[in-house]
Image 1 (cartoon, rainbow, N blue to C red):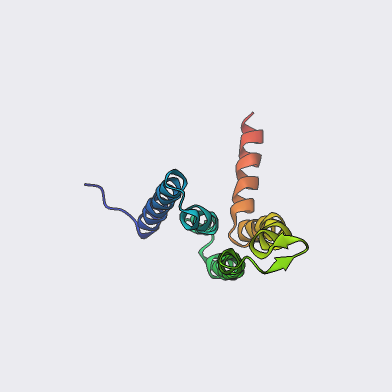
Image 2: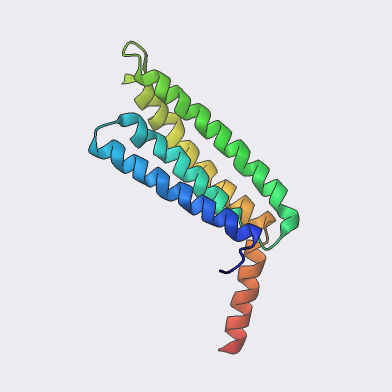
Length: 144
């Protein structure tokens, strides 16, 4: 049996968590359990963000990247909590939409679209991913 590094163990755990989340979402879809289907969205996004930094080339940038991802995920889960609470109430409306739909449409969608990309770019910069990619591109250009 091959000895795994701590980074590989972390990657394995994240992949198992990702697979489990997808299976729970699938069960939610088959049996019409909305909470399982909806809850999968922020969990999958969080797991993919953590997977992106699990094997950073620059260990010095990892704590800063983790903080950026933590803050992004805390705000994300806060917004999704409002959606879940709003699903229980049929009397609250925002801009002519039920509160849960309005939060998804006006806050979560733009939040993920704008800040998701910014967080990923920040993580790529502080983690050294961009520098490694540039070196790889230069090496491939010189070899051709």
